[in-house]
Length: 108
Image (cartoon, rainbow, N blue to C red; front, side, top):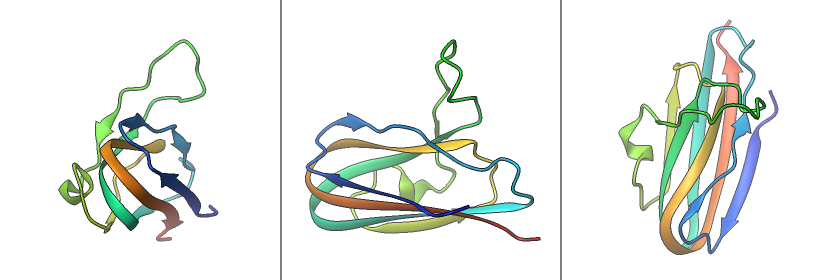
């Protein structure tokens, strides 16, 4: 899967859009890097295993299994083998620039 990268500028309190991942990638490891480029931003990474493309459901958002990516205020990078169908970044507050990169790879 190609890396997904998003830059949030002066996000304030925002619920981010879902970024779909490849659920067919065998033995996946997903690494998420959140780089606080400037300013001060409080953010959390969430994931879902529900179909984000089904308009009849509201995907259940679950906190990332790495606590460092929940209510974070500094740059963080974490990897997990937890299966995730999609991820998103929510910001609680702040002004500045946050760059988020999601890399998913197979260990096979």
